[in-house]
Length: 340
Image (cartoon, rainbow, N blue to C red; front, side, top):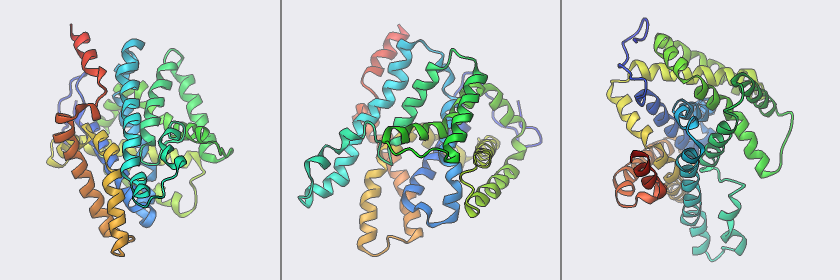
């Protein structure tokens, strides 16, 4: 099928992994790292808040259907187990190589601070919380799979509206995580329930990509400018329009060098997600030392360099010589059993 009114996209096999969706994950990880590096120093980064994580969870949902339909004995080790393996492994590594290392050098590391990683089981750190959320998202989606999808989506939209509108303010760490899940669940669930319909829609309406992105930025900037972040209709509309439009754009140009490069990054996006906090931490210390901690250009260029460096380290070093750092040890045995 081709994109109506636009450049033909690549031929797609029903069971093949979609290159433009992986490219979207590549863009999502770039946006996450740049947000951690630059923050809200630029309006455009504030406006992208409604695209960044919804895009990642929507893309993850498009690939989730096969896993969610698998038997529990296959689903738990392959999907949930892999995600929490990475989380439990990298939380202490990242902590003791950043904040913990600094405190130990200064001899200021208290017992409570030394045990900080243990508390992150219910209070995930800012840079790795998405792994925790993704694992819970898969588990929750699997649990509600037997129920009518209209009821599940309706409940997720209701929870989204409650959380975004700020009707309730939760102070407990676990409830805060549940709020984050509620704010992202509709995007994951929509994509996982209707992946084939969404793929067809993206192909047929790909010629609307640029107009859709323009609409996204108009809505997102208006939300930021007029403090509309508590309006669930506005935020959801911005997110879904932005996600769909970006996927359309990537589909139209899926044979280009740029999209193929983003595809390689997206396929190994977990490398960047789990690794980037370490170099970014020391890069920020360096910038503070030379008085450039608020230099947006230095932060942006550094953030992009960290993305490339983390991808290269994960792809060409860790995945070859320390595979257990990126893949749960039991997955190899599981593949052998599945193929026999």
